[in-house]
Length: 281
Image 1 (cartoon, rainbow, N blue to C red):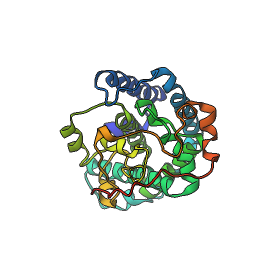
Image 2: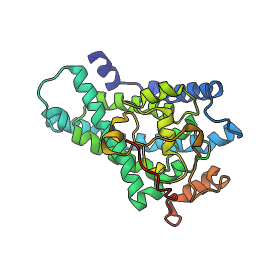
Image 3: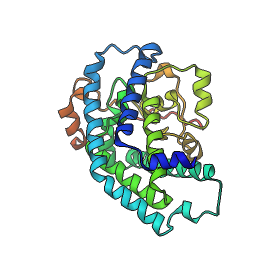
Image 4: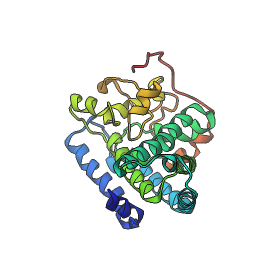
């Protein structure tokens, strides 16, 4: 465990790039073998805007990386944050607890806030207007959202008191999970459901991409599903009933154009229609 943290503390940029490209490639191939939905689309045409936003996310994260490192160095040097206030515990417990907390603050909380604050929702909806959710959708975030998400990540590092090795480990796991849960893959239903008791599974996250409320406002988790279950935001829906996109932004052609997507946050505020379905816990 110590060697793993040391590796991620100094992980080369090339390794992180390989993780991103390798993950997309792996799930891209798997989608052709075990597709959840038989999309009638040109895959590369669909991927283009999503890959564009992946690139903008990388650029923004790289530009602000200094603040993340400085925050991590400060909390470690000043013995600040939840992890630093704990009594001595085994390293594996320390790492697991740290990842859980970073996932709660930097992913679950950030995601839930984006859905419940009007201004932030209008930025985040770019991620939801994809009508063909697949592995490339994982990083389909408007540049403004990338900045917002980075802010929550820094807040998480500050409150958790995470060292840089743990942060890099968490972000690497988070990246792979985002690709896994967005990938257009069909796992056996029993396996998918079993996974969803602790971790976010593909079917579980696809419910979040259903085009109407209350499903859109559920299943916010990124790595761990336990936060949705604990806070009452977990929902189920048969995979065959899921329709991707947003009913209030239903223009499929516009939702596939980079220029239109960049302008989307500045439209009139609109949320999906509420179907008044009861949440399942």
